Length: 198
Length: 109
Image: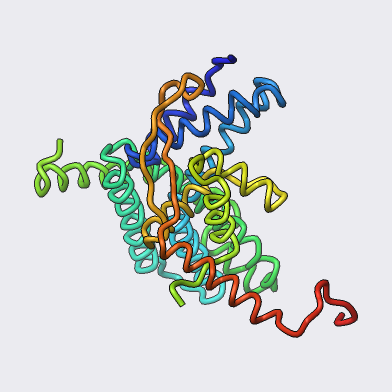
């Protein structure tokens, strides 16, 4: 029997995504399929890719709601700046920052609550930020395809330019990881304080 | 009507019915893939199993692990009465919708 193991990192990520009671059974199913069917048919490299893809699927399902809300909020802010230009971005930035921070803390809180580990919160923040970045970049591209008249292009420049539109969502990964870790720690405190779980 | 089932939910419940005592995660995944004739993500099947169990349409128990699974246990699923009823309702609804048509449809494009 082939006892080759799939990538350890992918297994560790899966452990942070799933509730503890689900991790053992789900990872066992994946390992069984990996060793008995995928590895003999595809070889080590492609079997590892298959395993990573399956784990990515679990990550997507666990974080798609938060990523959708965050991506939607970023696209809405982009549309507002482009289509309803302003000289004072202070109020908009304050609201956007608060919404994004709230989403990251909430994502981290719920992930850690489900998983009983604050590290799950950190992972949820990173996954949410990356998925939201894809949504917001696609959204901004769609907006640009629809509205690219001179006044809109001027508004885009005034609001920071296209480079900011396309790089800012990716840069959200770092604060997203920190804020969702905070959410994870709040979840651990909640569990300890109200349920007596360490 | 007990519940409104989607196509994928029906595929998962029917896989459990077919597999009988051997209905655990990997077997269900492979059965669904065979019947739907396409690749299906393990996460999609897992999410559906969790949802159907929360709806009370199926139950599960832990089994023992095997060497190929590195000792990790299997979770075996079985249909509840409400799951059987939901499948029967879904079939009855589809039959009612198709009543009066010959399959496959022709000349309606």
